[in-house]
Image 1: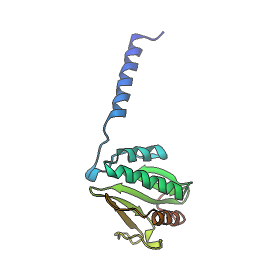
Image 2 (image 1 turned 90 degrees about the horizontal axis):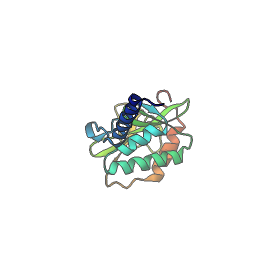
Image 3 (image 1 turned 90 degrees about the vertical axis):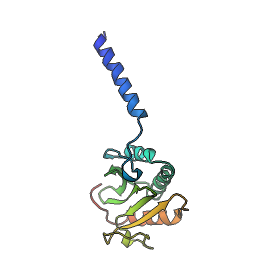
Image 4 (image 1 turned 135 degrees about the vertical axis):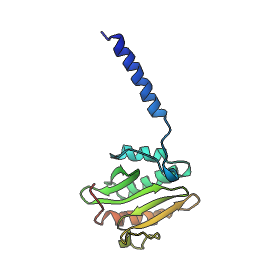
Length: 157
């Protein structure tokens, strides 16, 4: 038999769970979602779902293109950004929300051909900034993703 205390605790737990599900995500500077560190697709999808406005569609498209280009990709959220890598090779790219654009970072981008347009302080890293009205060259992005996935990555996956 369930005690009255257990029933009350269960009722409180349900309310807390409901609030967590319906709570608005916390957005950091530039509208970047604050998502806890986590491995796998679920934290990445939580990040994408929390991306504000038009950036959410960009996040969905980026994620779909990356998975299409590299079906065995490993995903995680680190430092409030989705990371993509190959098991045992490290991370090859991530993306991050800024106020007016979504920044895709290729960690070995200087080795890609053609080299992505955005410079970095790190000589190996190159960026692609995607603005609201940009027409994404999906074929070029897929080519860069495939190339990047075949290079030694950054950090541990």
